[in-house]
Structures are given as C-alpha cells and as structure tokens.
Length: 161
Ligand code: ADP
Image (tube, rainbow, N blue to C red):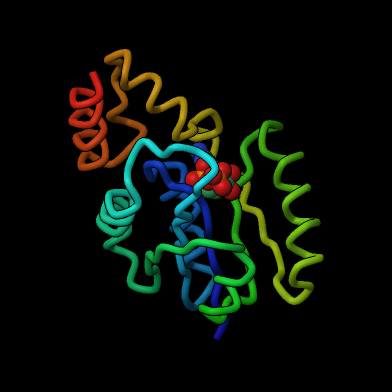
C-alpha cells in the first residue's frame, strides 16, 4: 500500500489544491492532506477552520483524509506511514522554492520521495493569497473555490473590515 502526504497551509483550500489531491488520489492508495499550523505566518483562517473547509471540499474522495500537524513535515510523513510527498507546481513561480525544500527534506529523510504534479492550466495563477486579496476587494472568486469556501471567505472579509 502506497501512502502519500500532501502538506501545505491550505489557507484556505482552493480548486487548485483540490485538483492536485484528486489526481494524486488516483495514483496512491491513501493520501493524507496535512495542514500545517504554520507559526511563521499569521493565517487568515484558524487551523480548525482550514481543516473543516478542506474536509468538506474533499469529502467525495474516500482514500483522502485531512489532518493537522505542526513541526517538520518529514516527521509527520513518517508518522502517517507516507513514502511519498506530493506537491503542486505552478508555472515558474513554485520551482525554486519547491526545489530548495525538496533538497532539505531529502537531507532530513532520504526515504521520503517527492512527486510534483504540474498545476492544471486553469489553476496556474491561483494561489490562496491572491484569492484572499481579490475577495477582500469584493472580486468574484466563485470559479476558484468550492461554494462553502467562497462563503467562508466572504464572512471572514466582512468580520475583518
Ligand atoms: P505552502 O504554505 O506550503 O505554500 P499551500 O497551501 O500554499 O502551502 O500549497 C500547498 C501545495 O499546493 C504547494 O505544493 C503548492 O505549490 C500547491 N498549490 C497551491 N496552489 C496550487 C494551484 N493553484 N495549483 C496547483 N498546486 C497548487
């Protein structure tokens, strides 16, 4: 059985993340979506909210589970029995950072293999941060996230105003 981990901040989950998770779920027996607490950047959504939004978004994928973690991703990967780390790559923007992280992770755990999925064309320019910026300026984000995520962003934007 091949278990994979797809880790990130998911603040919040977008159609780009869902696309990667759906494609990875076809290749691996089980995928753990690992949501980082991320103490280094102030998140828009609290950890519990990010978990709930992701769980609802991925509800239809029976071999995908969503968990929170803190500390090193390689340690959490080992804990869930993952042999593969999944990442998504958008155009040129992600490559250098992902490469750097992959080299560090390989040093930390040489047994964990990285598999990168090329982002689908329609989500190449979609990031959680751009999404929040557009939403806070009252732009339409409905084609970029599931409906429940769009609603949660709208509610949060109103509260933060
Ligand atoms: P991080 O804080 O690690 O960047 P993110 O939640 O932003 O976490 O992203 C998690 C992973 O999903 C990363 O590998 C990122 O490159 C990938 N990703 C983010 N947005 C997209 C997208 N639109 N299409 C494909 N992959 C994406």
